[in-house]
Length: 304
Image 1 (cartoon, helix red, strand yellow):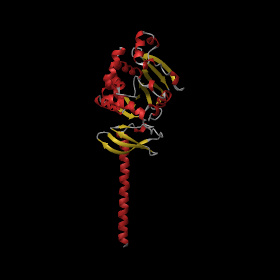
Image 2 (tube, one colour):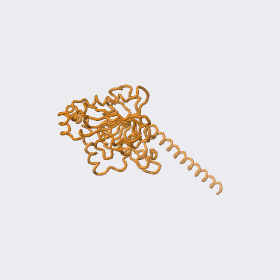
Image 3 (cartoon, one colour):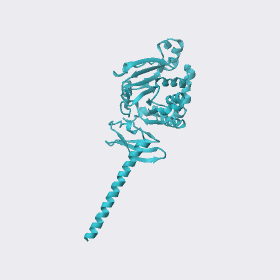
Image 4 (tube, one colour):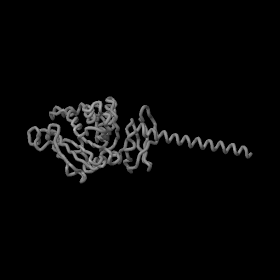
């Protein structure tokens, strides 16, 4: 009986050791997947408690992780769908979901729809977007976050300028519209660009502080419900001396006095907006205001 007891004990120890090794191997594999397949996970944070996020479950993957669950140490879980994490907190309310659904519906045709602005305002919006290149350092790596990325038009314009030198850029984009994010994802793949995308909102950006060299936002801040908070979040995630660039509809003082300017405002009252400088955080420095797109959009640039 004693011999049998010893044998059973040895088998039990062997089974326990195998289970521990398997658990360790699974953990190592998960850590490797975190690092290799979601390389930007380490710079994201839980939008609910601001803790670190880690990959917990993979439900679908090919060359990249397509469907998965990520979680923080407090147990808040978030879904990755079609390779895009959803880090929206608080949850989208019914009113916001209505306009998000509208953007989802128009996402595939959005680039063509906005070309109507070109004829109406006498501009070439894509060429204007290429001016983002003026803010890029001459050399070295550059980390950029595009807030309300839409169809990634700003990054496509940047690629038109830098062409085969896009490897120096670490590009990130967030938007509440998954339809827009899918278009951004598709366009980036078509141009062989690496682009990390997150579904989120500007009032609770799920990135760690002091990370980006440039935070860019085009067309949207005029209608934000909490402009001071949006500016504050942009400033939080940009590094010290980094740039925040914001532009939206708003005629220059000179333009709004002209007959053309008056007609534009009458047709679309958003162009009556003025740069919301009163909402800038106290820590914003070197603030500059200019007008772009044939004097029909204001541009605010400031540093941290």
